[in-house]
Length: 190
Image (cartoon, rainbow, N blue to C red; front, side, top):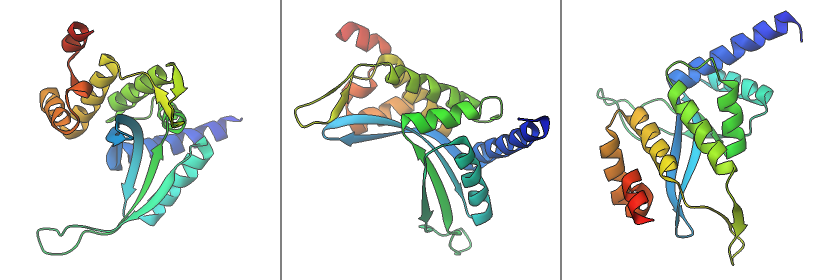
C-alpha cells in the first residue's frame, strides 16, 4: 500500500469516526431471550442523509464489517408541529463485527473513545469464555461477571449522562437482581 492509499484510508476512517461520534451510538442492548437476560454490544449510525449513510456503508464494506440497514419513520413531531425527517440506520451487531469496527476506529474516535474501549474489553472477555449447548440446542455462555455488568452500566451512563446508580436501578427494575448486583454483592453471594 502506498502513502497516498494510507492517507485516503486515514481520511475515510477519520470521517467515519466523526460520524459515529456525532450521529452514532456505541452501546449494549439488554433484553430477555429464552428466559435469560442477554447483553449485546452494538454500534449504530443514524442519519437522514442517504449520501452520508451510503458513504458510511462503503467504508464499513472496506473494513469488512457485517451490518444491516433499516429505514426509520418519524414517530414524533417537533415543537412547531412538523414531523422529524425519516432516517436511515446502519446497525452493526455481533462480537466479530463490533470488535472489528471498534478496532478500526482506534485513534480516530474522540467523543466515544471510552465506549469503544469498554465494548472491546467486554467482547474480548466474552470471547474467552466457555460455551456449550443446552438441551434445546441453544448456545450458552457463562453468567455475566461483575466487571461485565460494570461495563454495561458505565457505557449506559456515558451515553445517557445519568449516574451509574440510576442505571443500575433502572436495569434492576427491568431485569431483577441477578443481572445488576454490585460487585460487593456478587462477592458476598458466591
